[in-house]
Amino acid sequence: MSELTVPPFAVISGAQVQNALLGREKQVVDLVEATYRLHDEGDSVNPPSYFLRFPDRPSDRIIALPASAGGQVRVDGLKWISSFPGNVSAGIPRASAVLILNDHDTGYPFACLESSIISATRTAASAALAADRLSRDRARPARVGFFGVGLIARYIHTFLAGTGWSFDEIGVHDLSTEHAAGFAGYLEQSGATGKITVHDSAESLIRNSDLVVFATVAGEPHVSEVSWFEHNPLVLHVSLRDLAPEIVLASTNIVDDVEHCLKANTSPHLAEQRTGNRDFLDGTLADVMAGRVRPAADRPLVFSPFGLGVLDLAVGKYVYDEVSRAGELHVIEDFFHELRRYG
Ligand SMILES: NC(=O)c1ccc[n+]([C@@H]2O[C@H](COP(=O)([O-])OP(=O)(O)OC[C@H]3O[C@@H](n4cnc5c(N)ncnc54)[C@H](O)[C@@H]3O)[C@@H](O)[C@H]2O)c1
Image (cartoon, rainbow, N blue to C red; front, side, top):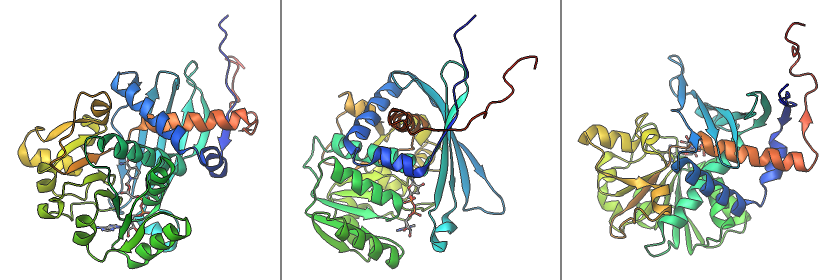
């Protein structure tokens, strides 16, 4: 008889997720870095994300990100994440998500975690890691600019601050003056270092920032003036569709995963469609981490992270282990019920 058993099934709330991740910015960035290496070494399975779209609701979508992580994480699973931008005007977050973890040996799902926090956390940890790794051969940015200031921008600021960044100036720009003012107020309250300025124009924000963080919900490029980038900033292009191909083509381009990022009309994908080749791509963040690629300091440097499901798994498993260690797993008794083959 084999030793396999059906694992208990637990549900982990957003409050538990937040508690497990609070103040752990450095650990999570290290975990994300290790997971990028794992992915780079081929010890992961990360198929293309599946985008569920609706003809009657074109701005909404739900994305499935299945993945399998090897190494010490050793778990399979799925993130299922909705984006309904109309939620924001009703005062509720745009994105909502669950993460299912599957047992490596039996395939049984053993946990369902609230995952909007996990998703924002892995995205912010990846951005903070990229800011560090991509600024090693250039002057360390002292002026950061946040372009689009929702939940993701807030998490990225937290992760930058939590991993040792401080800034002389923090710029803020958003289509909504209300959101810009809200984020500036949040920064002040949170004790952020640096002079906080709300910029009315995109040009002013970009020209006055050495590190530009795009976290809008733009579906197509709205920034196309190459001269705004003539001071060669480092750009964390987290929202993926803000930059016109001209800007991509005038920059050094680093992505998280080439096949993932050149899809779904991201700005790098548009640049590929425009030129018919991928010559404008310089490599992945893992290439930079391994020293295989050294981005030039005399061009704008754009990091476009598509967002890998394998990162959600790594952060989700970390949360599961923390909650389990604290003895706080809410197990759903009898979740798997038909367990005898012939009744
Ligand atoms: N690459 C990744 O791995 C990854 C992961 C998670 C989220 N994201 C992306 O991050 C983005 C932000 O997510 P969020 O949850 O913070 O969204 P959100 O809706 O909370 O905030 C987005 C903000 O951008 C502003 N905005 C929209 N269009 C703009 C424009 N053209 N110019 C300036 N401001 C604009 C909105 O007013 C809003 O304040 C989304 O596009 C999301 O898909 C990427």
